[in-house]
Length: 120
Image 1 (tube, rainbow, N blue to C red):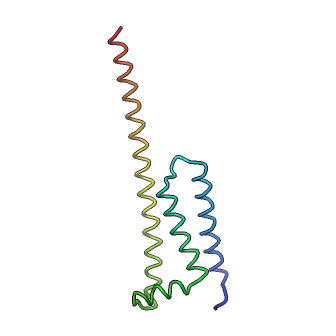
Image 2: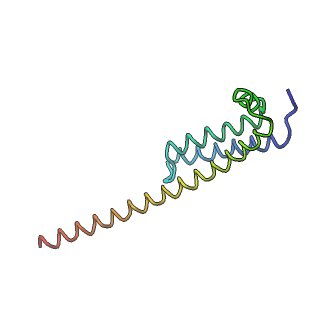
Image 3: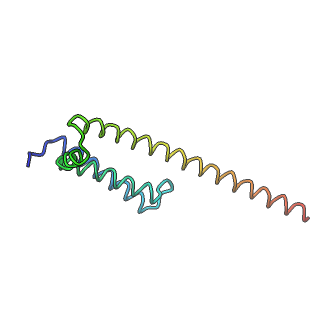
């Protein structure tokens, strides 16, 4: 087994910190936290932390699929970029859903008020 470098520890610590942060936010039932988003964060950052501490996992996966050495770096970078983009899109969708819900509530209240004023 190779020695663990400071970079591996930093990446694993960041991954652990993000998982803890999201777990706390999920436990508090914050508005933007869904079970899908929470489980995705835990899985992705758990894998990033695991691969950072145990690079042999990435080598095993690479060998199973028959990829070359440099392919690992490209896949990791692409994975992180896609992960960030995925959560940006998910955040935008959740914001739009919240705005739609707010509009529908306001319209429903207006309709109730109109119905009450017609009955009088």
